[in-house]
Image 1: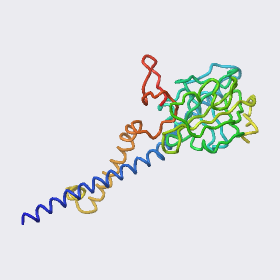
Image 2: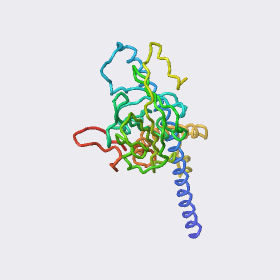
Image 3: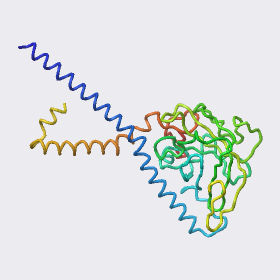
Image 4: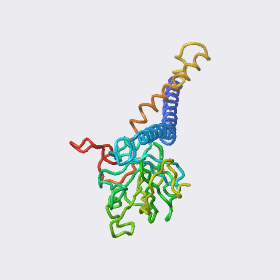
Length: 229
Length: 69
């Protein structure tokens, strides 16, 4: 009966290997659930908490020019075309920052300009998927769309004028003071949004450029500018 | 493998099922809480910034600042 025993052992081995493969498949499926759902839950919760903290902070501060608090976030980005409400903007583009469900302004490799600078390029990055996926709908943004950045005292209303739907991840020139690929040759008050593309991967980068149209003072009731109504 | 675990769980079928459920939940919790957050930065799915090819999560010496992915 040695043959039967060997056959039994082979069958047992095959079934263990099969079970391990099934287990690996289930773990990978769980990882997808984690990446595309659970990280959003955590990041949205965190972003909401930090966002209301910034708004509280603004409400308590007396009016007038105050020290800029870069740690908690400098303001909120509103992009009606992305249909995702407001996105808190914080300093830096490290994973620790972006995983909180916020957009970050670049410190490196090219330091971002600020919306209130006379000239410069305000450069932002956020996740396309997972961790809040704040720039998930970046491909819905078209030329002429409004992008509004809200600070404590001012609405900065930008208008989109160029998109780069796919570029190398090493193309840091999109962040330049004057981003040449957008078609601009002179310094101005630009805004650059970057995220990864195609969706669910990070092989390339997607870039959207906008230029400042006007600014509006925030009134006591924080009335939204026409673009957001 | 799973059959072996099932045989070694104590109690009748109901108790075994309950223990199995608790074990599965514990494993899923451990994965979501510890394993996936650890594994995620090592996988190339979610880099969003343009950069000079620095490794993910690297820090500038002395700067103490997280570098863009």
